[in-house]
Length: 638
Image (cartoon, rainbow, N blue to C red; front, side):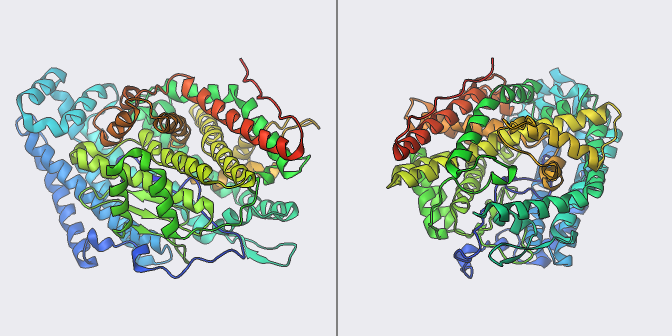
């Protein structure tokens, strides 16, 4: 996942969509080599240097208010000061938060990260007058200033966006008040993170072979895929049972977050939280609504996959706890070096410039690769240090999921590299709506490389099954999450309180519909009541309609990767241009210019078509092995 500066678009800590893990008994993570750890001294050479920068930035934030009332006459000079300070604040935050995430147990590191967050809030307060004062100039005057002064070119999109956002912009005092509330509004996410990662007493469970495990979140990601069904049920019962035991507290934190989203949306004159959230990037609400509606229309494709999963696993009563074991086992592991080499080979279709820059990043100590006690779980790419380079946190364990996660995060990193190389700082911070395209396109290219290198039907089944499962998790699962977010925000917007019990009931209803649990013997999947507590674990629900962008991104990335591999004329140039465009225009416009319109059903229907094509291949292999005739694709509902 792409991790960006919290004061402007994203939360302080964002987990990857999937985190690579290895099962017990697999090759353990080796002792990290120097080149497998990141070098944050590239950001600040010492804590003392960081502390001095923090102090100066707070002073500069105070001094920024001297521009208030003078933007009309000093527009370029004041914008220079604002964006120079913003870049510094992001750099300060990058240093502190990444050190903190490397050891979440260290109170001193946590304190520095909080200091950086407070600085970001302070900057938001002291710069809040910019939008109202620029609006007061009037759209024609702003446009005239842009045309008259070439020095304003780096800021033209920023200025024009403010004019477009006029109906949702408050006066300077009100904007400053909301900016000052940023830290408070972000506390539910912070509390959730502390509970999940540090304070919930996770249970100890014993598997059938006598293996004893402490079922914390890292172990959950690991052991939910164990081969034995009874063990998987034990793991699900224990983990979601713990979630359910704490659903009251976790319901209160999520409820507070959703109330905060609605508070900010109403203050900015939006009629819904989702409208406020997507409009931050000028994405039409039609994109969100089309995603949810088209996904529901295509649920028969998901159900076809679930039936195929049950068939390959030899199961007649598919359970939710059967979602994570691979369809075919592949007893193979990769080193970091091998994963990097595979990523280089897979991305060759993107051109020699792309792969040479990627190779330079691999050798530049941009990444902290291996898990250890106290380290933030999951994976992310932090591209906020514009003048330095991206930083990546992984928890690499050598399985194929770890390899795909590496390719995914380095897709983000290359997006940041291309954006920083081609855009000034004020236009370099690309939208999350586009961010996940680069990462998921890398995953799609990697999958094709693995299929190309497969030497047996079983290997092909493994990689095809992995690709299919990736589409389930990244498309259908994220669309399901998006629908849940829509439902719980709608409840708050209609004056209904959110409780842990109510959230579990709402989530369970959506989960049963997506997985075809009709409550009868003909159910596609049997969903247990305990599965309704899954929402309590998912951190993305605190991020204000973030997850839908995974689903939209994989749809766009699938189209790009297919066309690039087919060498469709002009597509590669359009793709690299998209990654190089940063935040120079509305992300919806940039993507539509590149050939993909996410407000139409076509990209989402294409995902369903891709899944059906994969299943056709898998069923042909299965039928060949069994001497039976493959099933036909299930048509979508009209």
